[in-house]
Structure formats: structure tokens, C-alpha cells
Image (cartoon, rainbow, N blue to C red; front, side):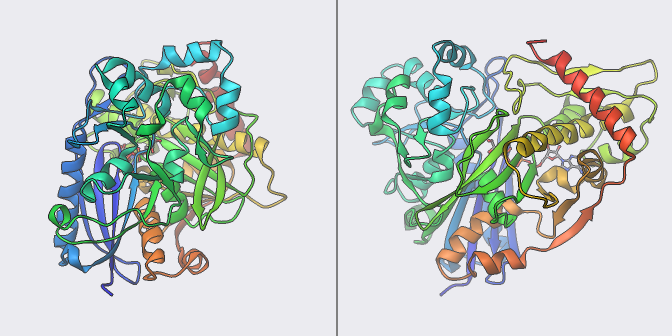
Length: 497
Ligand SMILES: Nc1ncnc2c1ncn2[C@@H]1O[C@H](COP(=O)(O)OP(=O)(O)O)[C@@H](O)[C@H]1O
Ligand SMILES: O=P(O)(O)OC[C@H](O)CO
């Protein structure tokens, strides 16, 4: 058997492809950004063709750098930005509209209307989610309402709905496989995570025809085989998970109580709760961490919409930095006597606040405030928000006396300053792994272990290696002061203040 596995990581701002060898080493990578489309304030779209092109481009580069061809691949794993909605024509394969991205807020009023009808508890009980425009269901309903003829075609079984994984698999397999995995399904607002099926009652509330939904599989399963004409070889797709769940797997957070946080465009913390479907009292999400061999492992999730995106705003919006890594150097030089807070609610506030109408705010500016204080405020905002999530997790789920250790990854985890400040503000250790590409690693693990190229979960977990442990070193009084200042800033930013 050929000894390579390909992970496709289709993210919000770029697509990546990574080739791993049989020893779990990265031997080739490719990455391609694609345009973000902002048709109106609060709307975010992607062109599905641009997503597809960026994926194929990345795969081509990764294979070339690994000096192999598609025929050398034993299996493919796919991981993807979650919740983003694509609807395409079953006969032509053409999308009927741009993809509506997870960040898009266009269904905010519809969600409010559903809430006013008292429907949130029903959605939460069945899906573990909340009525927020973040999730796929209301975006799909919007497309069926707004694209001419869409609902009739969907009812006639002529349209397919998918998250990005389904769309890519459909195209990679030459329209032979219409599937998704349990983790992606669990983000749609129409999938019943207790009964493990699309939920008829929720579908009828949102007027979504069941005929347009993909089959839901375990994360390690047979998702189809790539089409020779499209891909250059027939390779089985054997692993699929939403990107945050794939990072949970890549971080080997397999035991209940283990928690990871990924710092990319946004930040997503997942706490493994094992077979327990914990209902949050703190407005966290109950979601599927992974499903293997017919058994679901659940997680509590805290989702923050803006993390690295605040650094991008400093670079591209304010233009006070030239590149992301400068923020750490600047933050280290910031005046400790000037407490400046940035609440980065650029697209509303996620967990645990869920305020889609809130907008970003800066507090504590003086004549002496400069780029260094802005940089520190942007990086600290990510740490404070993580603290809010972990505090909420502690309220929802007790893990005996065990000390909590946070495993981190994503682009921002490269910043030593941020990770040290995170440990300081959490008052808990923060572990950064040796392989920082944990999302792709998780997808590769699902596919490679299924094809027998890599070991199973236990050995994989033992192979997880720490690159650096950041230990808390901040004085307790200073921490308490800073946290108080943050809570005050958040209160003043929320629309209910
Ligand atoms: N050294 C750094 N310090 C702070 N932020 C960083 C650093 N390196 C990257 N970032 C931020 O991390 C994000 C990129 O992370 P990545 O995991 O690639 O995101 P995504 O998958 O969401 O596109 C960007 O928003 C960037 O601003
Ligand atoms: O593409 P990322 O890494 O920003 O992740 C996006 C999340 O999956 C949204 O829920």
C-alpha cells in the first residue's frame, strides 16, 4: 500500500493541503487564499468555485512539494470551516448562490423572530445550539426564500445542501457521493444530536425539504472515492470532521475533561465531555466532538468570532502594524499603567454572550495611547474571552480536582507573548504542541488510521508532544484588576447594557 495521506483543510480565509507520511511527518504543504465577499454590512460570502480552485491549487502544490502524485496517496481526510452553507444543482453541479459564510449575520432578525415565538429551547434541546445566525439552518432557509425557484427545486430533489465538506466530496467524487459527517451535521441547527438524525420538526419549522440533505456518516468512514478524471487517481476519502473538531482530534483530546482552543480568524474552545451530552447553563454549545464506530463523543464549545481577525484589523484596517508577528513585540512594550481594552465585537459577540447586534469598542484611551497599547489590547482581548469561556465551562462541567491544562493551536498560538498572557489570565498552564497544524493532523488521523497506515487513538495520543508549556506568572491582584476591567468593558459593549 502507498504510504501517504492527504489532509485537505478548507478554512475561512484560505485552503490548505498537507501530505503526511506513514510516520505522521509533514512532507508537503500547499496553501491558497481566496477572496472574501462582503455584499452588505454584516454579510459574508464565498464563491464556491473560488473555494474549489483554492483547494485544487493547494493539493497540486502539496503533492509537488512531497514529490509524489495522487496515485501515491493511501487515503484522504477532509476538514473544513463549519456552518458555511452551499446549495448546488444536483444535475449541473453548479451552486445556485455564493456560499453564505458562518460569520454572516443576515438572518439575525429571523433568529429573533423564532426566539420571540419561544422556539429557542426546542432548538437547543435537539441540536445543542442556540438561535443565532452563526449556524447553517437559518442561512439555508434564507437561500430557499430568496433565490428564485429554489424551494420548488429543493422539494423536487433537484438541489443539494451541504457544508463545505459535502460540496468538496461531491466534486472530488465526480458527483457520486452526497455525504457529510456527524460533526458538520451537528452545526446545522437541523440535526438532532441525541437521536442522530435530521430532525423532521425543525426542518418543518425552517421549511427545509429533507430531499436536499446529505447522508450523515461517522468521522472515520467511507465517504467515497475520488474520480480519476477530476483528481488524477482513485483515492478513498476516509476521514471528515469540522475544523474545530479535527483540531480536538489532532490535539488528542480524547479523555473527558481535556480541552483545546484554536486561535485562527476566530477562537473555538472545545471541552471533551465523553458520552455525556451536557446541557450548558452558561450559553455554551453542546456539540459532537467526534463519532467513531457508531459511538458519539460530545463536547461543550465556546465560540469567539474574532481572535486573529483583530490582529488583521490592526494590520489592514488601522495599518499600525506591518505583519501579525509585530503585535507580540509591540505588546511587550505597552505601558502597564494604561489599561486599554478592546472588545472586538466586529460581527457581534459569540459565547457566552450571544449578542449579534453588539459592535466593537475601545476603552481607556488617553493622549498617550499608541500602537503598542492597541496591540496589547487586541491580544489580551483573545485571552480575556478565553477566560470567559473556560469559566463558563467550569460552571457547566466539574472535573474533580484535576488541574485544567489548555492545549492551544492555530496561527495566533505562534505568539509567545499571547500564550504567556493567556496562561497568566487563566491562572492555568497552556500547552503548545510540537505539531501546530493540529486541524490537518486530526483529519489525516481519521483517514490514516482507518486505512491502517497510522495507529489507533491510544498510540496517537501517546505520540502527542508538547513544544512549550506556558506557566502562569502574573501577580493575583494584577490579574483580578485586569479581569474586572475587562468585565466592565464587555458590559458597556453589549446591546443590553
Ligand atoms: N505571531 C502572531 N501573532 C498574533 N497573531 C498572529 C500571529 N501569526 C498569525 N496570527 C493571526 O492568526 C490568524 C491566522 O491563523 P490561521 O490558523 O491560519 O487562521 P484561519 O485558519 O482562520 O484562516 C490571522 O488572523 C493572523 O492575524
Ligand atoms: O476557518 P476557521 O479556522 O476560522 O474556523 C471557522 C469555524 O469552523 C467556524 O465555526
